Amino acid sequence: MNPSERVGDVVDRLRESATVETVYGDPIERGGRTVVPVANVRYGFGGGWGTDDEEGEGGGLGGGTAATPVGALEVDEERTRFVRFDERRRTVIALFVGLALGAFLRRR
Image 1 (spheres, rainbow, N blue to C red):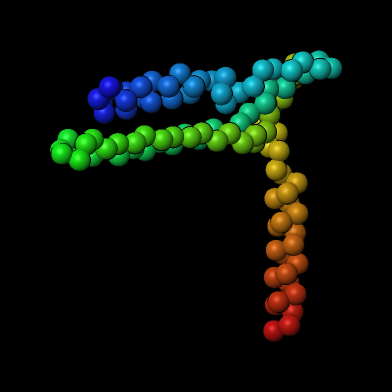
Image 2 (cartoon, rainbow, N blue to C red):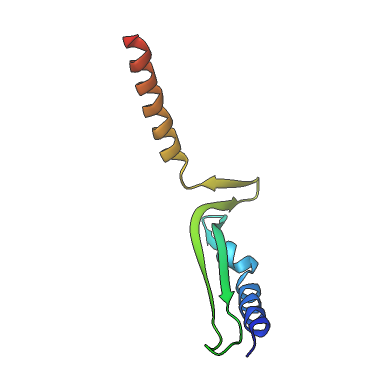
């Protein structure tokens, strides 16, 4: 298999895995609400190749994916809203930064 065929194979595999199902999980219905999990999905790949010479042919391809849950869509008869999973963490971090900044300014 030549280098362009190998790269094409990797790209085809990424296309097959980059679907809406990768980002949005299966809906869950509870108590008149539908909850759809949402994830942040990242893909990356790279490769290198040598030349044909007396030493032989070089090469290499690699790739990876990462998925992080970020929230959920909550759907009921009245509305649809996005609920972010890390809202509390951001609020707590903002509170501590504010307290630290206040303490620092008070000393001056």
